[in-house]
Image 1: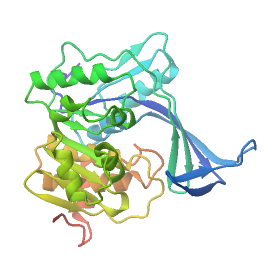
Image 2 (image 1 turned 60 degrees about the vertical axis):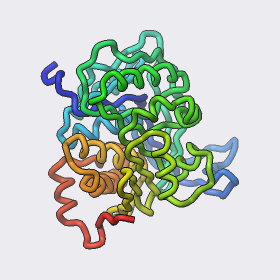
Image 3 (image 1 turned 30 degrees about the horizontal axis):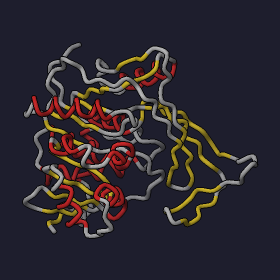
Length: 329
């Protein structure tokens, strides 16, 4: 393929097709685990609309985000030999994502999740198929690898990626762990943490990863950096985001907006920050870019429709309100 020797960002992780089902009626009730979405058991539940979104998931969202910003974006993922997988690949190619490293697995289905959308939040019913993951023996050296959510059988694959990074020290790793990766624990994944340039998680995930009740964001970031990552980024939803590069700690507020639907905001933030660094921007500059794409994604349904071109992102940045500023903390 043309330009195959130049990979700006190689996203690695699972992708899926997701029907987005907008519920008409539901209850959101408190529970010890947070909030619960409740509908009538054994009843017919009304929904307002449904829309099928393809090639989504953390890795797919990252790959499309980088491509929209003009980077040479590749995706390493697995799909089944079915119409769902073919649809995912077609969708990625429409978005200028290179699909050379997508593996089609015979006799396995593609990932197909369901999103229940109520209010501005979503609840996702997930089933990550356990594909025969294997890192390619030969691959052009990317500037960045963006490694994220993958199925529960992925430990050997993760260790292969860690070995690749050790053998290719010029490749920088952005790590945004998914649920199964967090469950494996930091000791099991110590090799991948040690290779990480840029680490992303939200506030609650930071506590879970570190097995702590600590609430101070500065301390949490310092603890994450103690696991190996050079730069730790902890997001806190509408309260903004925090970053620690070992020299300075920063706070970046959200870009002011009224969200329509929040799916993919975290992916947009993390992938945009990574893309900015891949383009040679400083961490300070990258932190001003990331909330803009996160904001734009929440204005439309799903994780990819609102992802911005470089021109539109710069337009938002130029017209940012006075209080949209990075602060050292």
